[in-house]
Image 1 (cartoon, rainbow, N blue to C red):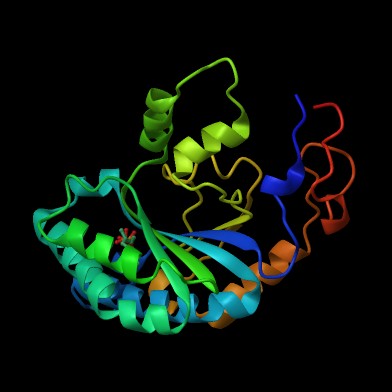
Image 2: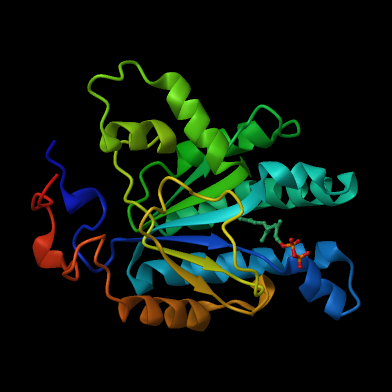
Length: 251
Ligand code: FPP
């Protein structure tokens, strides 16, 4: 089997895939004596800041964990408020995203979402399909383990199955770079069923900041710490852009 590094690393600047677990909205609000919903609203502001900053910081793909399949366990009132916020983002923000050449897609199940959200997702995806400066992927009713299970169910032939072919089934994208960096806010240090296949060699960045406080400077700080790390992908040599697209020795 011959494999290349090209799906892991492409050409340096402007090509990174960053995933963010946006945690801490509730605590941010509670510390201010506010209802949790106000924390989620402030979280949307942080999403706007980060989406605006990302293309200027070398990010090509940004995957945001907005609602996990386990979040249905929250009180109904909070779930409904989160769904309303997501619907509002998808409908009100789309013109600005299109103007800024951003492509928006949503990963996760759509069949359990409240009425109107799946349609809003479809409209936002269609309107922004030509966006080239940044690909924003919002994970809603998302579980990485379910994404892997669903991919297994869609495998047509096990004989010629490759990592690349399976990745296409997991991600639903023809070419999606593996995640380079996962950021989690609020001091928690776990992956919570987020991008488990895509993050095989992801670097992890944990910060104590609550998500509503996160801004472009914090993103730059996370990226600068990421860029100082040596990525060896299991080998002994750091992988640099010169090695890209060359066969991985021994595979
Ligand atoms: C985790 O904080 C956050 C969420 C479950 C929701 C994230 C949603 C947003 C940031 C807003 C909508 C997103 C988009 C893309 C428009 P938490 O509530 O678990 O915080 P806690 O751990 O402090 O309780």
